[in-house]
Structure formats: C-alpha cells, structure tokens
Image (cartoon, rainbow, N blue to C red; front, side, top):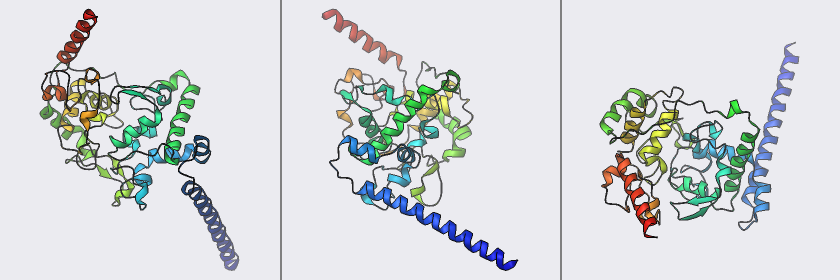
Length: 327
C-alpha cells in the first residue's frame, strides 16, 4: 500500500511539473511574441498580439509589470510603485467615481489642458506621466494596445449591465463648501480616519518588502506618490474621490471633512513635473482649483489651491459675458 501511494504521489508530482512546464512555455511564447513585434507595427498587428487580460494585469499590477523596479530598464514606464488600481479601485470595474467602465465612450474629446482633441491613448499617457509620475507608453506598443482593449472591453460590459448594476454604491455626491479648505482641520481627519492605512507619514503600506510588489495602500505624498501635475492635486478633484470612496469600504466622511483632508494631503511635498506652464494654452479653461500657475486672473495661488473657489468662477463668468458683449 505504501509503495502504491508513493507511485501515485510520484505520478501526481510529474503531472504537476508537466503542467507547470507547459504553462511556462506558453508564457515564454507569449512574451517572445511581444518582444519581437516590430516597433512600427500597424494597429491591426498590435491588437492581434495584445489582449484584454494583459491590459487588466497592467492596470492591476502596474508596479510589477512596468514600475521602476522592473528588471528590464526598457519596461520601467511608471515612476512610482503604485498601481493604476490604486485610484481606479477594483481595476476600474465598479460603477462610480474613477470607474473605467464608461471611459472609452468619452474619447476622443477636447482637452483644455492639452489645448486640442485627444483620444484614449493620449489619456492613458496623461495618467502615466502625471498620476504615475512616469513616461509615456509608445502608442504602438503592446502595453498601450492592451490597456486600451481592456478599457474598451469594460465599456462593452457596461452596455450589458442592468440598471441596478450600473448604480454606484456611493454616498451622496460631494458638495463643495463655500470657504477656504483648512489643512489643519484636515490633519485631524487624516489622523483619525486615514493614517491607519496610509501611515502617519503618508507613505502608504507596501505589499511586501520588495518595492516591485507595489502597495496594499498607496502613498498620498512624498517621492513615490503622484506628481504635482496630476488631477488628484486639485482639492476639488481629491475631495470628490475621498467623499465617494474613502475610508475604503466605509466612505462616510462629510463634505467638510473630505474637503479639508484633501487640502491636508495636497499641502505636502511630492514629485515635481516639468513644464507645467505649458498646460492650458487657453488659461481661461484652467480649472479654478488648479494648484500651479500661470492663471488668467489675479487671485493668489493660495486661493487657487484651497479656495474659496466661487469668487474665481464669478470672475470668469463676468469675463465671458464681457467678451460676448464686445462681440
């Protein structure tokens, strides 16, 4: 009986080894196809080699797949060990704030920041260079085509979802307080509700001791966070996300708490993006809470960073009305 059991164990181990070897050969074949696809390949060739699953993996495990710790220097596209899923929770599959379900349907569209029409690949690279503090993916790369395919597939999924599945499971929408955001009040909120996950120093909690494995909870400031050109540096943008999604699994902050803690988070140092003065060629299109100059108005930078924002909006409304009257 012992001999038979031993033989069965041997056979089982051999079968497992064979399966693992086949899987490894399959992965090697897939990676080889990626590696040797000509850089000038047309879009049809790219999409035949790319895959929705690879795109999902890149969104979910960005740090491991193309982060600064990747063993291949050419694959180090992200400048942070965060993942795209650090903001696009559940890899963007949940309806609501920063969902990716409907993203494809919104492009191409005009971008005030860039001063022209931009497609989905441009938007992906905007995230790569700002939120991920990295460099652009080549437009004709397997990685770009796969992320695009993944987002397009999510849009198809959304089209098949019933109304109940499309409804976001979020609290009421963020209602902007008509005052200056208070970073000191935000610090108290952070210490009570946020630092248990993101740390008392805002540096997040890593998955493992290996930086390439990314974060369980991402850093909110410091050298491995999003840079100062990212949308999340805007107090109103961050406030909307925080009100809708944070604390994770229990989003119950008030509008005032979300507003103040967004200001506290963005009062800290983070990576600096070059050439921000080139953003928004038409400065009248610049968001009122954009935290970096130049501006088409004389409001102080502190008010653009922390508010109150309604006087700034009123200024631009009057500017537009006066312009229309002159015409």
